[in-house]
Amino acid sequence: MAATDPARAIQIHEVSSPLGTDIAEIVQTLSALPASPSAPYLTVSINWLPDGSAPGRSPKPEVLRSDRHVSVDETGHSRRPARGEYDRDIASRLAEYGPHGEAFESLSADVERIAAYLDNELDPSAQGIFIVACSAQEIFYPVALSLPVPTSIGIGAIPALSMLAQMLDDHPTYAVLLLDQKDATLSIISLARLDQTVTIESTGFPRHQHQGGWSQRRYQMRADERIAAFTRTVAEETQRVLDEHKIEMLVLAGDEVIANTLLETFHPTVQERVLGSLRMDIRASDTDLIGATLPLIDQAERSREDDLVRKLSDALGAGDFGTAGVDDTLLALQMGQVETLIIADDLYVAGWGDYELGVFGTGLMPSLHPAGGDTANLVPVSLTEELVRLALATSADIEFVQTAPTVRAAELEEVPQTGDEIPHSEAARQLDEMGGVGALLRFSTQPTETDTDNGDR
Image (cartoon, rainbow, N blue to C red):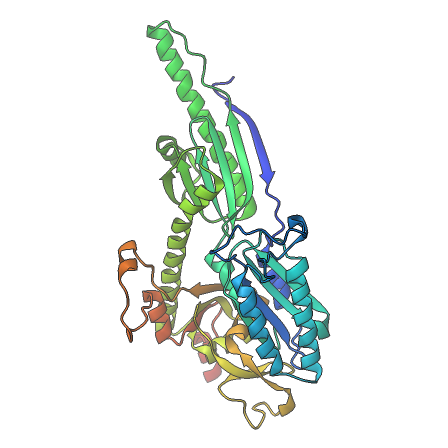
């Protein structure tokens, strides 16, 4: 029985974490918040990595480490350099709205609430923080992240979600299957952290008989049967997990021979999700496993960006099922046409909007309302954030195209000269020529031949 059914146990282990895990659901929730032009949202992201010059310094002796959420040095200063940067910047931004008024009062309360969260509530294991707050709307939504983020402050009628949406796009959930001829562990990686593991433990090889001849051949046959059966079990369990979690990327790691055998055993729908294989020790740590596989995920993301930009170019060339430029893409999103929003990761477009009428435009605030509404309802907006919000609201996919090209190790030693043009990836360069943003459409608004014929009649 052991030769034909070698799997001894299948164990599923959920990795608990105090950090935000279901970022996709969080982004959807935040995108549905109502616009608040008079008392704007405060959106904050902070890089929470400690100061590298003193990463191990203990807090003040009289305060227990377990009671502290923000470590400080002997002078009481935060060991998180970005905290000081945030404190300085938020004071300057807040002054722009003061000293009185609904916006100032709401933002002031938000700043106090954020400071209390950072000082007393944030889990020390966080590497990045993302917070959306609006006291006037009674909204405070903090998200502790497993990855560092740029430190930034956004104040506007809607939450600024592009950074969080880009994090989701750049760090998709994927699976790693680490195995040898006896054991296999399927790890689900989300936002560069371990989320779940499925371990398949096998029985040992059939007992070896030292009798030579026929006994040796029988032993080898049983060993081969055992490996084949174990491989089938691993393949079936892998397919189940991938389908259940809707995971589109799989990396094989471990014993090269059995990995190749397993690849042939996989169902075709699993084979097409395999990005590649790596030779690794079965005892590799989670950190080593993630570090070794992230470059493959990054490469897959760059390939996806190239493919989508090419599809957008083809759709625009055909004059159908594609649109480009801020104005046309914004209109397509408002009409619910967009299947995939494709946007450069450095795009920023300032504009104006009326959230009462759902009217938006680029450039300076108009003196007359373009739609005949009340000019008092016109507010400055980031059209980049509005594009992202509308994409989320209409369940469109969002693809951020990385502007910076992938740098090879040899190029890291080359120092750019002052005045040199900042290099762009090929996909970003092509997207820039289309206006920095575009969309693949679910349906076209172009009249068909039948529509034209009916109109002629």
